[in-house]
Image: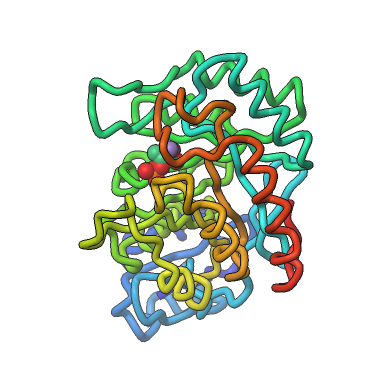
Length: 332
Ligand code: PEP
Ligand code: MN
């Protein structure tokens, strides 16, 4: 159950009521909000005098549920926004990893030349093998900050573990939590305290319920700037890297109030499938698309097989615009 406390409720009383009801307490900018377990269906007597409104919820998808907030939440960074009334579909693009100054300059130029403004590149890579390229770390973050200054781009980059979560929050415009970090409660809670948008990727063995509950950790920390990213789940199929769960996307759009971003690159794992999948994703009327593109994909230090070369990325983007328009959306 979600309980909006009356605006005059003191912080001390709110804290006391939260302890008594075993609730999570946060301030949503207008009021103190209590979120207690979803099996509670009736407002307890001791809460009633302090409550403005209360919302019994069917499951622990609570703050993210359309039963609580019917409108998709608006998420904002730099000069951009998705969700709310915007009708925007953001195309987030860039290489899997930032590898060099020269490489990221080429990526920045690609985005600028296509009228895109949100550049993604990983600095702390959650690699499957300790012997693979692990990312440039803080040096990469600093380069991304320079690229932002130079080109006026917004930057999204991922946090791999709690050791550098503060650094990523400081440097990024959007913090990406990767599929493997989705269960890291230290990261989720820290991002709940942050005042930056978060792109939360679905773990590849994660149910939709678990995925949205991970987002609840961020929302219930007081950060309402959360986007969900479907990036493929593991099935019995091995011909593609993962299986893009478009049924799951339909569920997230229907049941949750969070903007939904699709990542066809990691789902497919091979560049040849990405343009068609990107078009299918945009046709679903989603809030964003995340596509990996690299100046010279065969030389990429991570995810080489799935990254689009820049010419293919540019062609793909052009093909997305009329599809977005047909479903009442605009590419930003
Ligand atoms: C990535 O975005 O480069 C990445 C590692 O993705 P995921 O967390 O979805 O595997
Ligand atoms: Mn990648």
